[in-house]
Amino acid sequence: MQTEVLIIGSGVAGLMTALKAARFAEVTVLTKKEADNTSTAKAQGGIASVLDAADRFDFHIRDTLNAGDGLCHEDVVGTIIREGPGAIRELVDMGAHFTLAKNGDLDLGREGGHSHRRIVHSQDMTGREVQRVLLERVRASDKIRLLENHTALNLVTLGSAIGNLPENPSQDRCLGCYVHDVESGEIVPVLAGAVVISTGGAGKAYLYTSNPDVASGAGIAMAYRVGADIANMEFIQFHPTCLFHPSAKSFLISEAVRGEGAILRTLDGNAFMESYHPMKDLAPRDIVARAIDTELKKKGDDFVLLDITHKPAREIIDRFPNIYDQCLQYGFDMTKDPLPVVPAAHYLCGGVLTDLEGKTGIPGLYACGETACTGLHGANRLASNSLLESLVMAGRIAASLKKYLDSAVPPPLEAIPPWDPGDSVDSDENVVITHNWDEVRRTMWNYVGIVRSDRRLQRALDRILMLKKEVEEYYWDFKVTRELIELRNLVYVSLLIIRCAMTRKESRGLHYTLDYPGHDEKFRKDTVINRRMYIDKRGIENRE
Ligand SMILES: Cc1cc2nc3c(=O)[nH]c(=O)nc-3n(C[C@H](O)[C@H](O)[C@H](O)COP(=O)(O)OP(=O)(O)OC[C@H]3O[C@@H](n4cnc5c(N)ncnc54)[C@H](O)[C@@H]3O)c2cc1C
Image (cartoon, rainbow, N blue to C red; front, side, top):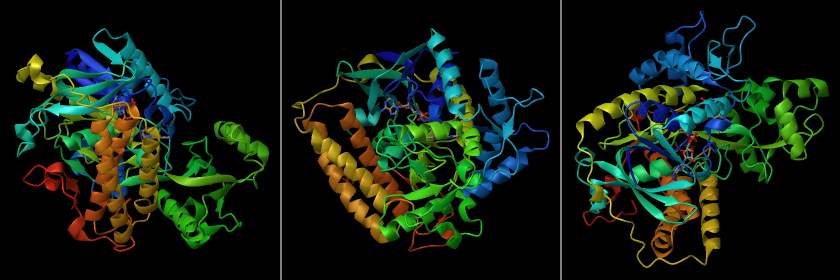
């Protein structure tokens, strides 16, 4: 298969980039499952942008820098925020229906950390609307080929094709990707003029997550394997309240429920937030998540309770119709029953390091959306800044792609050889894959979660390195399946999170460690790692 631009992922980042690149190139979009199975489609709150007369770019910039706790790149913050209103207008022109105020202007909501009303939303289902409008456009374009149930397996670069990482990534070049066609089971080499990875976050590395199952950190793991720089993986945002139920794997109970008076309690009824913060249950997100984690570890319980039963039933149902209905489906009437909740991995601030054109250090390889680390979020993401980042960066990446394609000689057809399955056989031990997956997620949850320590991180590192060795063996011994690809990527991404967390010997933003509870100016910088740092002269990845 051959294409000018290969885009991996069909969330806001992938689809918007595809639409922009289709103005000058033939584009192929790959997606692991159905095209609307994305974090994008689950986004509730909205998109932050300066659209109100009383608001100013400077205010949004200041709020973003405050949240980022000293690590945001100010040039990136300024650029993305200033280009935000244009990106929103573009979405509206494409046909996105956002909630309007009585005067016909966009209704602007306000969220934690924002000093002004600036959240463009479509009721509490903004992501679904963004996904709908972009997907309709992509399906209607004759310049875009959308392939569902196609899982990217490995990127191919000049270096990786000869089994060697060049000393400097800028001497390398991205040529395309091996792709697993889930229906036929075949692995197809896709030759591309340029590749954009937009595979979203990595919530599935954790036992509890608000992310959909597709969020297994594929793009970050693939980029790491071909030598790209990866940054700030220690900054994982945990949402304090996800419903605890075996089949409600990723259902969020919005912060607005606490905003309306819900109280967090341990199973014996203690309203514990009183002893953690003067704002009690309305303390900032990371403080609430940390308090719940401490109570769970102290008591050995699986969940805490979110109790709004003291409010009139009618008021609760009118204010939270969607949450009320969903909880009823899982057997909880929130007007009568306190809801079992746990914190859940929600957003990854780090990722593949890019510049303001979305370029990684490897020519021809770009990253967009949650997979990328542009420098916008720093050590903590301001609510509703992520959809904004994808929308703005998509346009900037497309402009850069055009320049790149105009100047680069297209790679020759034989640049990617057919996939060599070697002696691999069908696995008769799928239980090993499920078991290892479970082990990764529990290890990450217990030792690399909301509260960390040197000892916990070392334990996690030892276990994940062992799992990595085992998974690499299956990978070569058994025929590739989507589950195996995902497990392999999760192991890599977990390793990256642990290594970044071990490097940062301070607490900042979303990274909190008992051993270094305060800021340390020495660490007021990005954590940047790459594969070159971990391979020895024989090309073997060592354990350090
Ligand atoms: C419950 C929830 C609520 C949120 N609310 C908000 C909000 O209100 N405002 C806000 O700004 N942000 C919000 N976020 C965050 C925001 O939704 C995401 O950061 C953003 O949508 C990510 O977009 P993306 O395009 O980078 O990735 P995604 O939308 O996750 O898309 C990733 C795509 O990559 C595909 N993929 C993954 N691996 C592979 C592979 N190996 N091969 C092929 N395809 C692959 C997936 O199938 C998917 O199509 C929320 C997130 C969640 C989970």
